[in-house]
Image (cartoon, rainbow, N blue to C red; front, top):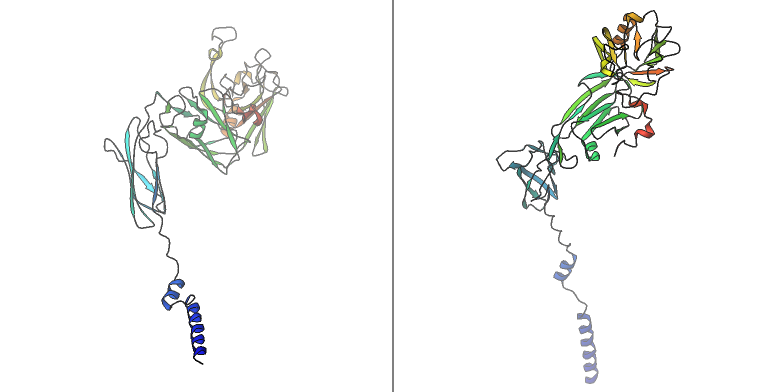
Length: 392
């Protein structure tokens, strides 16, 4: 019997030891059930553009600060001479942008302060210098600010010096419209680029032209000297078609034919170039002078005469204008030196209903093809050729 008790006690001890290997306390259960610790919020990251110690920074490029994992509390941009450059934050205080352009050959310090999602404050600085241009260049858009123009009006830009980086120039030249209009640039030379729509403008379109070239490197350290901007409104669609065989011209306004009038074009020795012109400018009491296209006034074919109404169609001297001396020929034969002759009454009517940018087509004149570089005659180039971009 005693031996039996000793065996039982031994067996029970082994069982208790085995059970003790898997037993957990109340405190241990509580610890295992508690959630993992929350991750620490990220620190603020600041990106300053340009970077510190940058040289030859383009004064016209954006100066910016961007914040991630936090917000900006204060940003300053100060020149070495103490000049303070204004700027502004976006709505959620995660981005800042300078509101003024910088000077050439200057040193600036950009300082950004902010607070991160972790509550820690950060400060970053960037000190940089702007470029010194080898040359500055200006640009002139060939539109009058606030003008109402025709559906054929291109946006022509003339630079005062050759441009080697044409992509950079195009990025600085913006033509925006409402409604949005598809178009593109074409370089006729290194100094002359034109933007035109793929199709004619729609009447009523509002167009804004911005040449933001100041401080932009346009190639070979040639920098833009000044920004230029202008707005224009597209008026009624006016199209005139002058026919050298019938000696008459018809006029359509917004698709409706409104008038047909007799004309006289260039005689066989001076035929009028055929093609689509775009009205350039209108003049009253204008002196027509043959010497402007190489024929002296005192030559047999020379002349100098003042007309009451004249509208320029080309650089080469093609106008439609009042010509009371050829009224007897108008409607019957071509006797001019290349211009489109009208009676005084018809020339006045035409100018009262026309404007720069209107389309003027010359057909069956017996002349050569109008060159697209002769005036605003950009519609002489088909879109497939226009989109090639012109000169390299």
